[in-house]
Length: 161
Image (cartoon, rainbow, N blue to C red; front, side, top):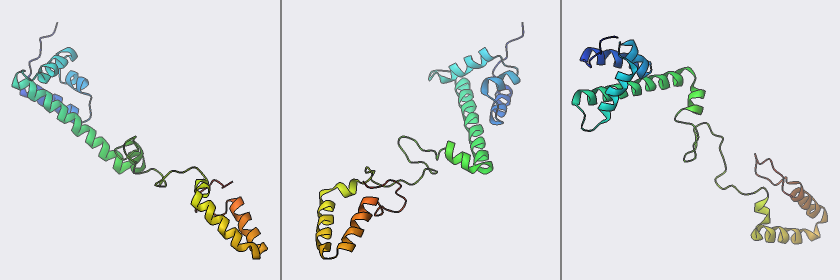
């Protein structure tokens, strides 16, 4: 049975350096000669608001090193593969926020052709068609365009029926 390792400044610095370099905390502790169970006990003591200051400082240093390692990985991902970083990093789309790489969407999402179904638009189209009764070819051309969906906004892929 091995001698228990005490939490010293040297042991803490080793663990924190390994974590900052990108190692997982428990593996970093083992690399520094600290058993996993002992490491977890130290972290638990550090999470206790009434815990000894050295354990609290240790837990805080480990968490800070984890954040620094994560930040380094995120910066590296942004530099090496920016599109992946945008899609999977802080710029990705969430339920609360549009992502940086999301396709632009119209402000109001209306069903296709819904604009032509509104009463004001139907009334306007009816008046235009009535005004064109003296010009049957123009009236027929407008009616055909409306029926074919040619009056859609650019980029709108659905047809008006």
